[in-house]
Length: 206
Image (cartoon, rainbow, N blue to C red; front, side, top):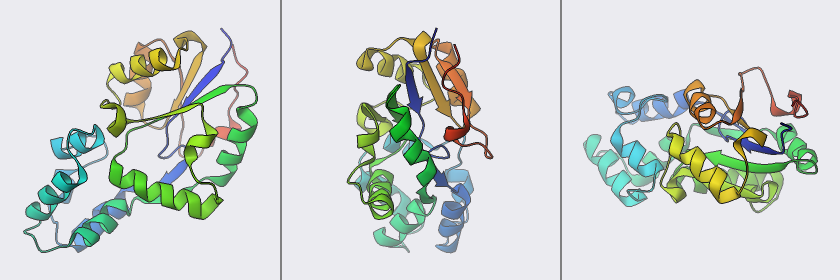
C-alpha cells in the first residue's frame, strides 16, 4: 500500500546527538562509573523512569547527585545531561515542510522533560520557530505518554491515537531495536544510517 503517513524519530534523525559528550561531561564531574549507570542501549531504571514520566526531574537530580557523592550542583548535572544534544539538521527540517504537503507527519521520540526543555531552546535559537511541533500533525514524547521504544505498545498507541493504518505508515529511526519493534506492529520501516539523511529517502514506494 502507498505510504500516507511518516513517523520520525528525533535523535540522529532530525537532530545531531553525541552520547559520548554526556558521558565525558559526567566523567569530568567525577562520575567514573557513569557508563555503568547509563548507556545508549541499556538504561538504568532511573533513566527509563525519567523517559516514561514515572519520576520527575527532582527525583532524577536527587538520584544523580547522590550517586556522585553530592559533589556536583543541579546546574552542572543539567549541563552534563544535555551535552549530548548538538543541533538540528536544518536541511532535514526544510524537507519536512515539503513532505507535509503530500504525507501526514508524526514525531515519536524517547525523551525526558530535561532534554525536551533543552532541545526546545536549541530549536528556537536555530530556526526562530517556537516549537518543533508545528512540523507535525502530532508529536509523541515518551515522558508524556508513559511509554517508550522499543516497547511495541508505543507503536500501537500512536497508530490508534493518530487513527492511521500500519500498512500505510513508514517509521524512520536510527536504532535497529526500535525498527524491529515497529515492524512487529506491521509498520513499514527504514533504519537511518549515520551517512543518510531523511531528504535522501524515497517516500513514494508502495
